[in-house]
Length: 554
Image (cartoon, helix red, strand yellow):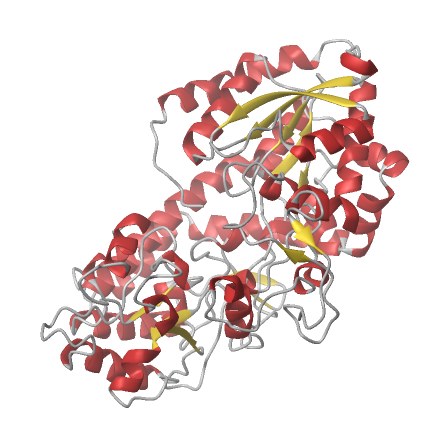
């Protein structure tokens, strides 16, 4: 799930060729059906697959093939985000693209801009009529889940592609702090609840040798540049941290009533940065927290000589320490609640639990027969039976029905299924992440999970219980519905450029203030003025128009 920086030359070429390559194909006559063995309809399908996944021999492929008379002709790519996106873009640019894209959101997915462009060119087949006529379960999901409907429906009213819906409770509150409870106990310190209590704890971690090796090698707080929520977790004690799409990093936009605004130029934000700066200046925040990658963070967390990490603001602890470690260090980390700041604020940022990218897209290469077969297959995946099969594999192998004494993740509901642990399940068992199209909160919460939250199999319960500390500290009135608000295609390129420039400017400015290369007392006004220089007013204006249109359509 970690983005990789890859060579962009080929992607740039592919992007430049996209319009030309796709437009010519879009003018073709309706595709003719191709039939293979046993009269099955052939569907060329582009999908990611890693070394453990062979889609040709996968049992779910056989189930879908037999049930919907489909002969899949797979075009696969890797789980590496850069190469996967590049291969997809090259296929579209060359005109040699498949009938169907079935992607994995954390590997690669179509953006809103991609979908609108492909829809306008005639490459992406509108799905709303196909759904209405052939897919009652998808239609029901769209009718009952207004966020999914808003995410899926383009400004022109068409549904050109579908995102996955995986309602992950713990993902909804990504700004968590995982703190070493063993160190707290050893030093006789309570779990910090305020900004100053956290400072006291981090000072003790730094100076009182809680790992017991006689060296001042403890790292009070750290993170990595890919997954870190350091600024947004600490900022919650001063200002509401904006959501980033799909559990990404800090965003820019919040709401004040129906006015689109941003907190990154406010006095409260400044006070938050001052606090973070004060921790950094004392050496309580690792200098590498803003630059190191996930692998480097894992190496620190798994240091064989000693436990090094006192706390880490991340989505979950397995990002920085391996579960099931021999010395049990992974069991030392528990969640601390949202911090309360000097003004009494203790926000926890809310985020969309689901993907913000599109992963199911039929193209104009697909015959009408192939389109119907594909949408019927997806409609089956939207059922409980179809989800069980596609996500977990065959019953009795990938999952079983609950037994006596089994308890659901949400222990107030009846358990519905018990997934075979990954270490015990055969490889190449299911479509897993490729099939997570209708994992509602009710479905996910009905999974059997052991009561021992420190066992590997009980990890999801550990995250569920930890998230309860943050639930209710979000401010939905300030939450900007990022994935539901579609950008006007006429200004999508401008908004994308503005966002890139603003993201860079804000992140560089914040880092400069935190590290002290800029003085927040004397340089703040220049920073705020510079925001307008990189287009903040225009960015807010364009997003306001998009938000107003979204509100009018609700």
